[in-house]
Length: 318
Image (cartoon, rainbow, N blue to C red; front, top):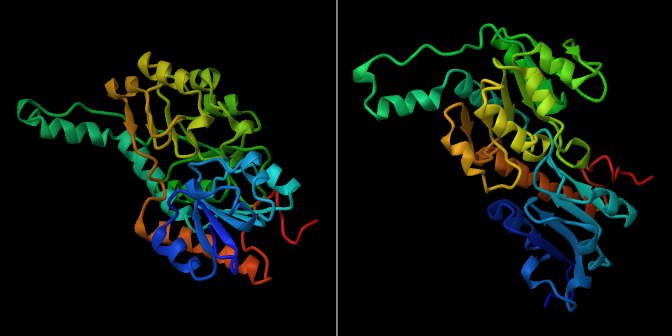
C-alpha cells in the first residue's frame, strides 16, 4: 500500500540508495517493483530505473498516472521511449556527468589490450619472469583509431587520443560539425582503414550487431576492437570466432550481450581483456548520475520541467 497523500515512485531495482532513495523518500512513497499491485499502481507517478529491468509499454500500461521515468545512465535502451512518448510520459537520462569517467576507462582498456597489461601481470605472478623476458608485443604508436559513434563520450575519447598523438577518424550517421576528424559514411570502409575500432554508440534495435563479421574481417589481423557501448552492438558469436581464428588481433570488452553472463569461450582466450561493465563505476560519477536522476524528477514535479529529457520525449512537449 502507499500513502494516499503522496505520489508513489516505482524503483525497478537498486538505484543509488544513498542518493536517489534518500533524497526522494520525503517527497514520494518509494515502491519496490516486487510490491507493485493493483492497489497501488494508480499512485505511481514516477519511475527511477537503472536499466536492468525493462520499462516497456506493458509496465507503463499498468500505471495510468505515470508522468516521468528517470533513467540512471546515459543509455536508455531498456526504456521504451517511443511508447512513453505516445503516453505523454517524459523520459530522462544522465548525459555529460559520466563522459570523462567512461573516456578514462576506454583509454585504460585500450592500453591494457594493446600493451597486454593483464597478460604481463599474470606472467609475473606465475613466476615466469625468472625463466625469461616477456615477449615483445604490439603498440599504439603505429595505429589509427576509428571511433564508432561521435557523441559526447566519443569526443572525450578522441581528445584523449589526441594527447597520445594517435590519429582519429570516426563513423556516425552524419558528420559532426564541431570536430575536424575525418568522417567515414561507411563503417566497413572505416574498419578497413583503421587499426583500432572503438564502439561508443547507443544500444537498441537500430545498432544491434552493427559490428558484424564483415566489419571484423575489414578490421583485419592487426586490428583491435574495444567495446564500451552496449554488448548488443557487436555480433558476439562473430567476435568470438574472429578472436579464436585471429581474424583480428585482440579485443577489450566492458560490455556483453547477456550481462552478467559472459560466454565461457572468452575465458580461454589470451587475446581479450574482459571487464564487468565498469565504465562509469566510481563513487564520484555514480553519485553524480544519481543526483541527476533526482534533479530531473524534482524539477519536473516542481513545474520547472525535466533537465535532461531524451530526444523521443522533448520538453516542452510538442
